[in-house]
Amino acid sequence: MAGERAGHTLQATALVNEAYLRLIEVNQVRWQNRAHFFAMASRVMRRILVDAARARGYQKRGGGAEKVSLDEALLVSGEPRQDLIALDDALNALAAFDLRKSQVVEMRFFGGLSVEETAEALHVSADTVMRDWRLAKVWLVRELSGEQLEGG
Image (cartoon, rainbow, N blue to C red; front, side, top):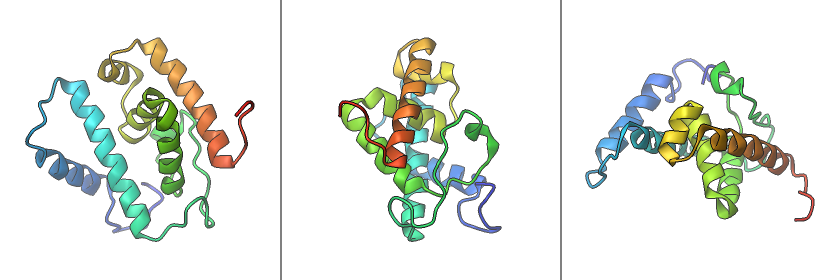
């Protein structure tokens, strides 16, 4: 978000406020715990960011936008995420055959959850989250670059 122009509508505070407003509208949800709340908040923030990118008219799969790097440093670097639509499409494709890996990326990348918080939300071990995170990053990099995976 740091790379966005000044005064844009998706400043960090505005994003959190919009996510909060959407989360309080969900009356039927019974929050199981803190991790469940953060998992849902990650999903809501993903939707807000992707919807805003679509509204700004970003072209699918590029259109001059930089490719998204899923390096660990990106989670805390504040680098602009200019190709959110391509990432969203790739995450949807990943979810089609491995939902948990897609959820790990969503929680860590969009929600900023730690490995431990993600593990708690998904009811798996931290080691499993790290394995899923590494494999998902490799898969997404290949998907976003247009490379074909071996054997498929």
